[in-house]
Length: 70
Image 1 (tube, helix red, strand yellow):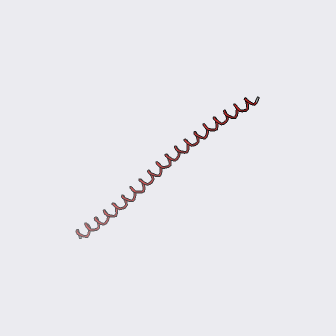
Image 2 (tube, helix red, strand yellow):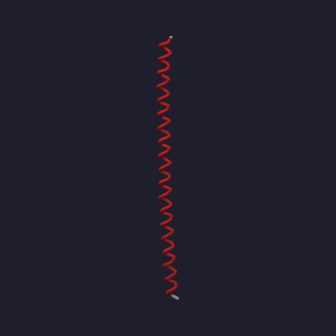
Image 3 (cartoon, one colour):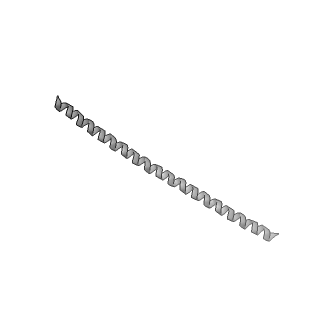
């Protein structure tokens, strides 16, 4: 009887260890995807800022050309 209880405990510990490993792996995968998402978001913000900067430069250039034509 005592031997069966010890066997059940060790089996429960093995299952618990596997569950912890699976949950840690899930956390790592989630962190990787979150990092990728933040990287994409940062790239989008940077690209938008560059487009706005270029648009302002073109507006200034267009205004200069319009003044030259007048």
